Image (tube, rainbow, N blue to C red; front, top):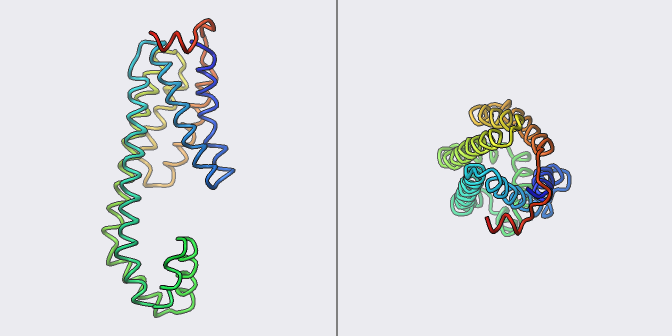
Length: 221
């Protein structure tokens, strides 16, 4: 296995940390780049170790995560645009002037109105309560996608641990599994981050590489 494969995994897995500090559009670009780089690395790992689960399960994890995330976000946007927004404007016509602005500007104006007018705040609360089941259904769908993807990531990493003899991947997989079922409480995110750290350590601890292998060799296996 070429060292470039490891570098892809090592750099790719670290990019989300950089994305957190940078933020904005660049953060999104870094996150996408991270996904691609780690997937390419796992494809190379699966070929080198002749273990298709290493790549297939990791790819399936990303597909499930992004699919559920997109469906949930589109659903929430639809509820806001076609249900909540018209009802909020009906409560206060002054919101109509900022309804065409970006989402952040609209929310700032809405928050301002809620703080200034207790009656308006009460009506907004009643409006949100009336649509709570719909909102929670899409948020719940998002959580289901995250849980399933974490389980798939865990299975991929366990397969990689067996093939590479790097136990940090097995630990990362176990922590991802635990975090999948504790997401609804705060500790889930902490456990997920610790698992992520073990995954980083795992990539940096991989040994026994054959430096003579090249990407061309891997492509023609």
